[in-house]
Amino acid sequence: MKVAIVGSGYVGLVTGTCFAEVGIEVICVDIDQKKIEGLKKGIIPIYEPGLEEMVHRNMKKDRLKFTTSIAEALEDCEVIFSAVGTPTDEDGSADIQYVINVARDCGKYMKDYLLIVTKSTVPVGTSLIVQRAVQEELDKRGLTIEFDVASNPEFLKEGAAIDDFLKPDRIVVGCNSPRAEELMKALYKPFTLNGHPVIFMDITSAEMTKYAANSMLATKISFINDIANLCEIVGADINKVRKGIGSDSRIGNKFIYPGVGFGGSCFPKDVKALIHTAEDFNYNLRVLKAVEEVNDDQKSVLFNKLNKHFEGKIIGKTVAIWGLSFKPQTDDMREAPSLIIIKKLIDAGVKVKAYDPVAMNEANRILGDTIYYAPDQYDALIDADCLMIITEWPEFKFPNFNLVRKLLKEQVVFDGRNIYEIDEMKRKGFTYYCIGVNTTR
Ligand SMILES: NC(=O)c1ccc[n+]([C@@H]2O[C@H](COP(=O)([O-])OP(=O)(O)OC[C@H]3O[C@@H](n4cnc5c(N)ncnc54)[C@H](O)[C@@H]3O)[C@@H](O)[C@H]2O)c1
Image 1 (cartoon, rainbow, N blue to C red):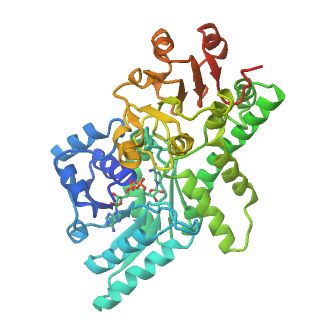
Image 2: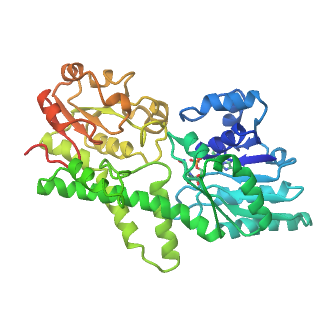
């Protein structure tokens, strides 16, 4: 079976490479010519652990190809996955124009039966729009060609994307034809051999499942951040509270780590889009609105602590920042809390010296010369008045504290991810702030 993947970004490239890894012939398409030219030479446009080796291996075996031409990709292709972006539109809804463009391209160039699978995160009802767009293009060509649409939302996590794709907790497929169901079963068989289920359902439910999943995870994060803020006020320790509640299997210990708010390419936009969908149907999604509000405020928490520590006299100060990507093991800076924090610092007249193990280029693309890009984590500390931890990269967890103390002008650490022990930091001579514990008492 030959499969085409349209959109060779975080999801499309991982999807295509993992299908190739299990022996399927894959062709990845993107409209970004530079990206495709690079990929043809084996240059990977994103940082994702393990992806580079896997792309190279499958290119060598001739199972993974790249093109900018959807017409070329559709030659002898039975299944096409659409994994293009669905960014937030001005009104908060998901912008599905790229998904519709792909549907139109399918209608323009398909020659035989085609199963068109939407892997992008799209609002309820998008599959119908896709179906109409394909049909309109076929009608323009005066052709009758059978096709099916399906929804197959993706649940991979950046930073662990390959593992998530090869060993998924579950695969969700929404479709309404036996032929589509058989094709999807066959495609995913190699990924389900060790018991991970493919859950088939109607298309509307599949589309909703993705938003509900991301919204649930975002809710857990905003919930723990809200509780963390209350802990600081009442004198409780969120680190202990988190352990106390996480050991209850009904709650679980994942996604209840306090921090500087959630970011990334998915949670913020998907929460917004689901609120918008609800509004379209005259329903008020109160919980998710609160989730968004808490998250927006949480991105200011570290800045507020800094401002309070220096008693509002922060103009001319220099802050060293460790971690820029929205989470560790990725270079993705989309909606990263670091961007909001850095903007606040710069607007307040503070200089920023930042270091991230992989996101420096991405950060430079967005922030330009507004900050100093340190070649390593210790260089960022030179002449800085304090250190801020924004992303919990493993290499920040056990730094050379003697060197940190020596390089900083003042031994002050604002830890937005609670990666250090409070007592240990005090013993080492630091004034230490974290999230959800009032360390100044
Ligand atoms: N990034 C994640 O962790 C993740 C996880 C699950 C689901 N998703 C969803 O998957 C979708 C893709 O996300 P992403 O992060 O991979 O996006 P991305 O921005 O990294 O990649 C999208 C790619 O699509 C290409 N593209 C746009 N229009 C095209 C067209 N007409 N033809 C060919 N290529 C086209 C772009 O050039 C880009 O390379 C989104 O809906 C997102 O919400 C993302």
